[in-house]
Length: 337
Image (cartoon, rainbow, N blue to C red):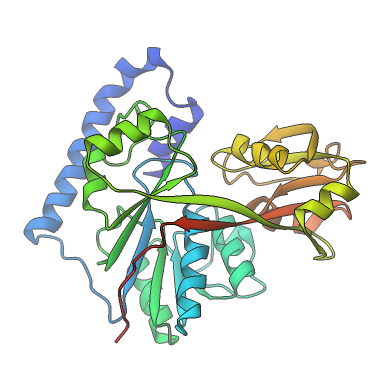
């Protein structure tokens, strides 16, 4: 799956002249996916139900859609209800000696991937990574977790789930609406109707609005609000307003699925950007490639970038922390045993 997704990314959403070449592979992808779903539906493969509720946060298209902020929102939501939350993740980009890997304060992004480490460092919740999400979830339940949140894994049908949330990038939407590798879709638009909630990250484009109307889907809106700016070395936190007053100009980097959204967020906060540089999602940073950008002016990055840059961070490197604001409030009526 990841190899097919990388084809899409490398071709920057598949150049038009490549589509005739990629369509046969998309048809094959569609056939294999449909066959796999059918096996689960008729009982050849059986989903494994756990003793505790499971919420899956996923998407039907590749790229950064806003799953991680939604996971952070869910963690806070259930912690306020007094529950012990556990999070499972594939741990993309990491390679551990054994799985499932239970994260602690010494776990590196090389072991668990950037998103998992970021979630753990922000929340300190019990978090396990591994391709076998059932095994990861069972480990967390054994550790006393009351509820399991799966970061991605919408297509991991082996794990039974109580609630499905599908996150959509409001501007990028569904691209050309083709399945991988000719397009960005892991599953067809029909999948939206099967989710418990469809959540739009940001303002919806006319194309996204039209699709939702056609599918008769009442979507919830998620806006990313800035929380604070934090220094990578000292952990000093400033409000965005105070940071903008203190530093007239900055350089910025982003290694996420939609880097321009990050740069636009900074500009909207009255932060003047001198240089910006985009990297591929999950990019593994090296000190030398950031040396010029972070030499004199403050260097501002995403929180996901920061967990990979702490080891060689300079004194004037900062990251922007964001949180999700959900409108209207989600109704997630599940109760642990």
